[in-house]
Amino acid sequence: MPFIDTDRRVVDAHGPIAAIFQEHGEVAFRAFERAAVASALREAAVVTLGGGAVLDTDTQLDLAATKVVQLTVSADAVSARIADGKRPLLTAGVNAWSALVAVRKPTYDRLAQLTIDTSHQPLDKIAQQIVEWLDVGSAEEWVHRATGSSGEPV
Picture 1 (cartoon, rainbow, N blue to C red):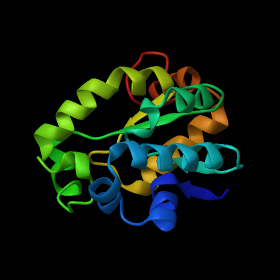
Picture 2: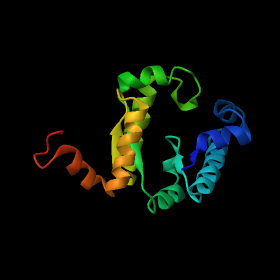
Picture 3: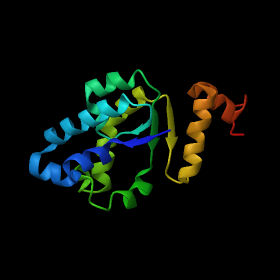
Picture 4: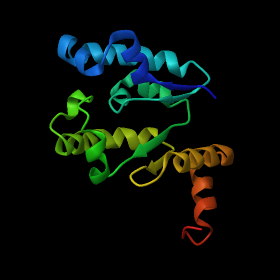
């Protein structure tokens, strides 16, 4: 299955995200992002979205018609991931990230049918969990399968 990173498409078409924010502002970036997301969601592919993409109401409507997996991470684990300076809204570090997540979490939770914490898992294990969930058909069935009837992890 093809893989589409919508942030990568924005970068390929318009340059580095930090530069877009600096030169054109967040509104311009969000317009580029929305166009990339709308295009990607029309393709048969696994599509990844940047954290702010789901704030767009049209994107929310588009996502309501598809399977959505939310990948989360703890504040401790995210520290190293945001140290590269490529995320303009997170230049203040983990505190800025925590504030953004707190505001966005209700939207993330509403849109996702499956949530996986990625803090301490290798990518291949995360991918396998998603594949298994897709094979089973729903997060509720997957959770039951993964935990057994007692609710304890198998």
